[in-house]
Length: 541
Image 1 (spheres, one colour):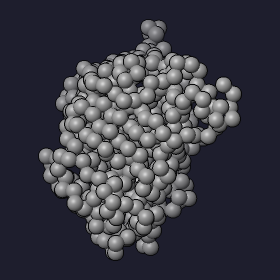
Image 2 (spheres, one colour):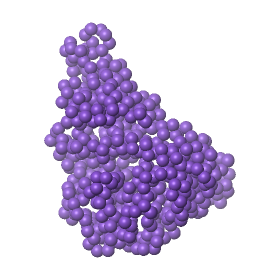
Image 3 (cartoon, one colour):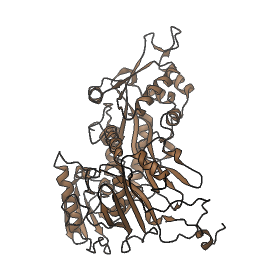
Image 4 (spheres, helix red, strand yellow):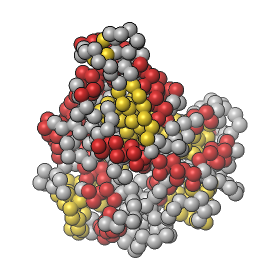
């Protein structure tokens, strides 16, 4: 439950965000006062300032506890696998991977030209030692790592030679590829509280824990050397302080989860861009309750929900509407699956066909003359009321088509008990979808978080076919078939994926591909605009 529900994960992250802001001086470059002109040719040099928590909880790259530390470690460390702009797994420290037995055994071939920042060469011994550490965390209930889930997939691993890692998986399929994106650390690292060398685009020049860190561009990296020479990292107490530091030109870039972060945008001075997350919000129907057992009833409910109103009024546009549990920026997403555009007329048509009518003229529908009410549950979260507010708004929207609904905002323990016991008609839930986009854990009949109690041999087969696919064409075909089934049958009712905000000074150019927990995915393409660069590049001032 703890590791699968994004509700809990989001709570932890929101709490940990209170560990991310700045005091003290920064060496970052202030933004120019005038209009920023486009630069055709990036130039080398300069520095930027970012933030980290004053107390990150630990200094282990395999056990980050906040988004800021995940982002920060992405500058210093690499995984065997990376992701392109469409969330497609692509080579990282592994130049390629192959399987010869339909996805049961995978071989990851390391690049031959990779060295750690301390000059030591990368070999499979480093990968094996990193996996050993992750396995020790997976086996220890008192130690958590966001990467330990890799051992839900791995049966065994070994070094075939210095450049080839062999991995046997518990269930055949492609999911292991995306899972191999955790940071690879040198074999000398024992999991202590000091940061080891990495292979990433930046190396650590200095570190004063709780205060500051200086990162320098890695001139000997396997990727191209970054244009920006130095990144100064300042510790701040919380995300509000981080944004205040940016507003005061003490730092230049902040990854914020605050719904109001986009208000920091200033023309030609501060840019804001949404960061897609894997945080999927949905309504889980209890299909064994007669109230929502019919797919047509679930369709009527979804047509009656104005998700655009929820996103704009409650999430302040920090969400993206979907009808399937696949992010719209993924190569797997099919726009053809978008089906349930808000329509009270369509909702009322379906409800009428199901035998609903306002027999007593009170504005609410009865079913075959009997009163009707939907019981909606949602978890209580004193630090972030957005999901409860969304549930209340949905109850209001359902009332517009004549459906009476009552919302119960429950403490976490009561909420989880109600989910497990099926004491609800509709439940507002959140799930952290893995980057492999496998959703068996809450949709398969045997899934640990299948709170709808939906059971279908056809759906199980579709989920198994997707998980077991190996080639990209097989994966895409299986994903599309699964998405089409989900919009037809609605075992869960998709709402949206949450988004965060990247706030940064407009002097930083070339910012692309940034994403939640991977802000610096393409940092080597970033560069700093300085007055006169547009002239040197042939532009017009």
